[in-house]
Image (tube, one colour):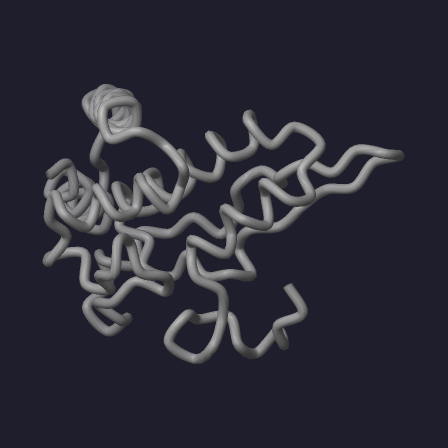
Length: 157
């Protein structure tokens, strides 16, 4: 996008999600697949409480003549750590605070992602269910793990 590396947060002039989706459409060799992968990444980061999912955490892999969205990395439940920011690095539907996300924010985000509300809602609910099932099988052996699970469970709204 031509943005300086130190401007990774939206509020500092870094990319927003709408620009990220537009870039995937523009340069991906398989834009349909990669748009859904980016959508899932945004939803997954919100569910796990990763407020630090900034522009530098999304990238592309180039191989021969193909350009594809890279796998996710730097996945941390930052919401479990009270000293870290309580605001998301990139707004979802105009909202930076996860606790204030409402249906109107999701509707706006789904529109920016280029998905219908019905299809996007269904996909988001399915991902929430997958994460919920994974949490049920996760043995909590520490206070930190319990806190992470508590945060994630609270994000299934």
